Image (tube, rainbow, N blue to C red; front, side, top):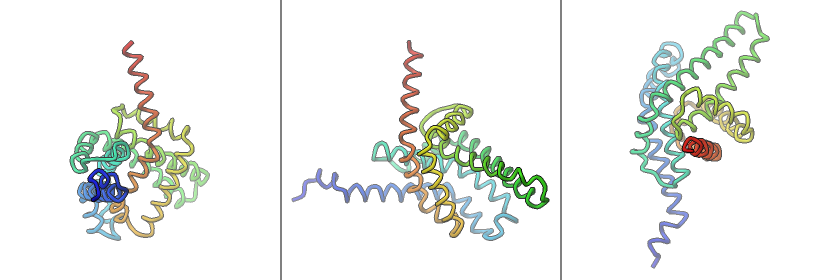
Length: 233
């Protein structure tokens, strides 16, 4: 007769647990993303014309949702066990204001850069600025790959969050390249399919990001411990 402990330690049990965690995390993410899903379903190909305002408002709410998802996937990577629903909505509530603010600022900058590129292409003047805007666009997007994972683990002022993200973006070249490749791959999938498959597989993507970022989080934890020990002296 197979021992109970052996069943719990078996690879099959571990895999089934992870599948369940991913499924429940996706459920929570889709639930908090429902306004965006409803907007996309309602306006379809007219989403960027007639439904643009609704798209912007509902898309901004994805900041807290994505941060909460990253938070519980980071916890799953560290502890191998989570209370999915409780942990998700706790993270959603705790990080809501800051993640919404950071996400909104990032969105506005990206939108402004895209509009600048579009206008320059239309008028035909100042085309030498287009590569500069593309570099800035790429940089802003890349910073986000560090900001939100860090936000899930540390209480930092927004300016410190941005500084740490910029620092790791430059210093951790290998991590940055892997994450950028992941973003390009996801972008291509979304381009040829839609945003809905991303919502379905969001938890797996978030887990991958947090797994890649685990050394970054550990480095920050060590830095924080050293800082706290110096303050205690």
